[in-house]
Image (cartoon, rainbow, N blue to C red; front, side, top):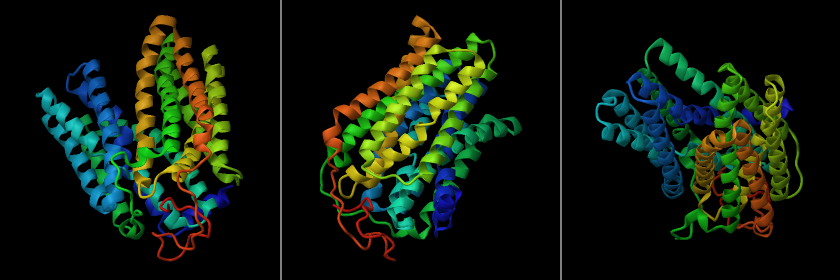
Length: 419
């Protein structure tokens, strides 16, 4: 199992790109908690803190596909680094100005969100060039999904450490400065500098003109909804049991399950169409969410949370492959960015729905939102099976990727940039 991942990390530029991307995404992965802690330290209410965090999330959802399209048109360095700097300046403005002027605070958060660089989609566009073989790229997608779980675990811890050592304002500044350094590390690398998207058809819909991609996005909106609702229902469960630490255990178990599932998925050689495989994985993901409605004791609930997380990273990794197969020519970064956006909007919707569900029907109903989200995600994939069965871009036999000057891509492998 480890040998396959080591093979990827030994590839030239691979470790640098993976680490640089994760570091560059640190501000977006920690923004919600950093904004909340800063707002509370400035004397703002929980409502204001939540609103500012929501504005950041929605702004990021708007900016990702737009910046992804710009990357496809103009290349990575011209977009990723300026966007990262502008996003960091937005957060720096918030840290400097505080909450003395709420319009200014909201404007700063909006700038930071809209300008969040699409490093996640950019990395997935680079993997075919860097790794070449199809099996290595698919394993890299799984490794990428696992690395996300690590970032979302370590990132909030880093913020809390910075807050305890200095202040919430300092945490905002330091985290975003680190993010700029991560983006800089990526864009000055040879793969990022030389990467060019394929010529694209001029169309205002861009990547969204692909029916298969739309079907996938529809499904993953509900996967995001399920995950978002669990975060709220988990808080209610912890309140029911009178211990805040219970929430930490549940989220840690969910992340641990995702880590294990992602590592196992990437180590296996999969055959057959990824669209069919995705339906099976999402079905298992939905099946894992449903038992959470039982809300048993803490130990049993922690085990159920771990089982619920097992198929999350495999579902995300498999979705990357499907995106690559259905993204129209010249829109690969934009297509990956749309997946990030849709998942994030779904998570926000899940948190919004789970709150009233808990208040009206108790903790079990909050987890019922998660179960329903998983089931609907599966139903969308089943209902759009014919669309997904016909990739928008028919793979062609190529010996050299248009972005691989060394001829690393094997014949017959879709690099994400061919028609």
